[in-house]
Image (cartoon, rainbow, N blue to C red; front, side, top):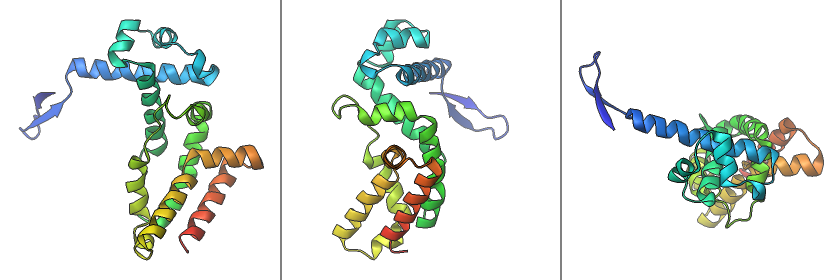
Length: 197
């Protein structure tokens, strides 16, 4: 990082160098290209060469950013999670229930890629770890969890983790034929019931 002087404050403020900015743009282009390919092709058919071509970069450039296909797909999974949860930081059960439709809608907008990510064999792709989601859920359920035994609190967290995941939305759509809004309403009702509200 290079330091730049802020004229308004006279202080120093860190900002990425031009090289770091270009690197980030290239990385994002590569991840976006993979997402586009996964929307139209089976992931096993997606080659590193095809991703490089779709992104408009050379294969050596692609490999400088992602040494393996597994790393590349892991980045896509992480990117999906970030896009679906940007600006989401519920601090209560009511806030969690309120943001769930938004999260479900965001996952629905990326449905093809989400389906692939969920269907990929566990060892082949790194899904966004529950470790990233659990602190958010613990904050949202704080007072509810305090009323439970440690074992019960863990069971509730596991259930809420699944209800707030795209898997639930997709299963309800596929098996019950319900809309994204109906899936979010179902999950919200279950969240309240599970939390005893």
